[in-house]
Amino acid sequence: MRNLLIFVFALFLSYSSPGFTAGAQKKPDGDVKAWSQNMKGFLKGYLADEWSKGMKFSIESCRPDEMKLFQLLVGAIPSFTHTYAFKKDCDLEGSVTLKLRSPMSVDLKTRNLGTVTRFQGQVTVAPGKSEGMGLEMKVHTTVEKGVAFEGETKAARFSVDHFKVMGVDMLQMQLETRSQAGTLKVSEFRGKPVSYSEKF
Image (tube, one colour):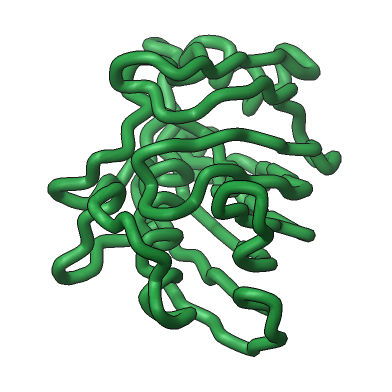
C-alpha cells in the first residue's frame, strides 16, 4: 500500500477527470464544480494512490512508513505520528497522528494544488473485518468539518465519505488497494452556502 491517508483531506484528502492538471491553475476556480475537480484529483490520489496523469502535486518523497501503516491497520500498534515537510516531491507540510476509529485533527499546508494552500478537518479511518481468510480488508474513511483555504481565506467547507477494499499480504506485510469509491460533498463555497456533491 503506497499511502493510507487521507486524509484528507484529506482530507483530505480521488479521481481522474478529463483535462485535470492540479497545480496549473493560478486564478481561483470560477465555480464549485471546477474547484471540486482539483479536490477530487487530490483525494483519489491521497486515499487510494490513484493519481491523475499530469498532476503536479506529489507526496512521493514523504509518504508515511508502509510498515507502520500495515501494523496500524492490522492492530499491531495503536497509532504513530508522521510529519510532512515541503521539499522536492513533497507538497504537504505538517504533522498527523494516525490512529483508527477515532477522529484525527488534521491541519496541513499544501502547494501545487491549484489555489488551495491549506486543509483542516476531522478524519476517521475505520477498518472493517478481514474477509477471504484474512486476505482482504475493507477500510472506511470519513472527513468531517473539512475546510480548504486559499491563502488566509476559507474557500470551501466540505466532507468526504470513502470506502476501499485492500488486499492483505501477511508474508510481505503489505497492503494494496483493489477497489475504491468515494463522495465529496461541498456545503459552502466562497462564503455562500451550496449543496454540491461529486462521486469518485
